[in-house]
Length: 292
Image 1 (tube, rainbow, N blue to C red):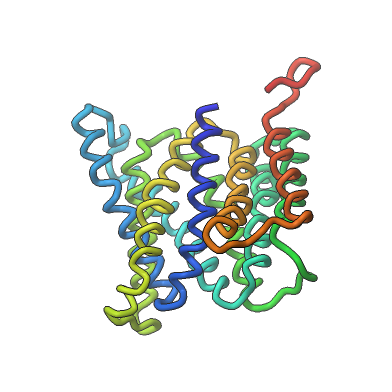
Image 2 (cartoon, rainbow, N blue to C red):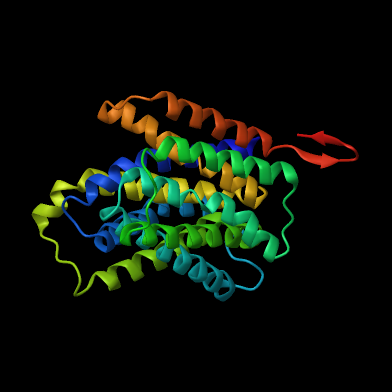
C-alpha cells in the first residue's frame, strides 16, 4: 500500500505539471525548459542527500560510484529521450491526443516486460486495457490522426515504457537519492546541450515562466521522479505503469481547478475505467483464488 500511495502521489504531481509544461512553452523552447527544470530537480535533492548522509545511509553500492553512475546515466539518457519527445511533440499536437498517445506506455510496459522475461498475469493485462480505454475516453474527443507531433509523442511513450522497466530492474540495487540525482543531471545536461544553436532565450522570457519551471523542477522532477524511483523498488512494473497513467486523470482535475474546465459524461466514464483498471491490477492468481 505504501508503494501504491507513492505512485499515486507521483501521478498527481505529474498531472498538475501538465499545466506548467503548456505554460512554459509560451516563452521558452522545449530543451531549455527541460534543461532548467531537471537542473532544479538535482538541486532540490541536495538537502535530502545531506540528510541521508548524516543519517548514515549507504549511498554507494558495493561496486562503487562507477556502477551507480553508469546505470544512472543510462536511465537519464532514456528519460531525456522521453521527456524531450513529449515536450517537443506537445508544441504541435493537441492536449487530448498527447495525453492518449503518451498513455500507451501502460500497454507497452507489459509487452516489453514479457519480451524481457517479466511475467504479467491476466489481471494486470486486463487492468492495463481498462486503464488505456479510460485514458482514451478522458483525453480524446475527436478522431485520432497521426501527425508530426503525434508521432513524436508516440515515440516518447516507447521511451517512458523503457524507463519504467529499467527503473524496476535497477532501483532495488541502489539508493534512490543518488540514483535520481545522476539521472536528472544527465537529462539536464543533454537537454541544455541540445538547446545550443537551436533555441535562444532572453532573461525576460525566463522571468515570464519562472513559476512553471519552478514547479516542473522541484515538484515534477525533484519530488515526483524520486517518489517513482523509491516506489518501484518493490512495485511490479505493469502495476506501476497503470497507477502512473492516472496522471491523465489528474491533468483533467488540474484543468478543472486552474482553468475552469468541466468533466463531461465521457470523461467521467473514463475516470471510472481508469480507477477500475488500477484496482483490478492489484489482484493476481494464487493457489486457485485471487489475492490482493
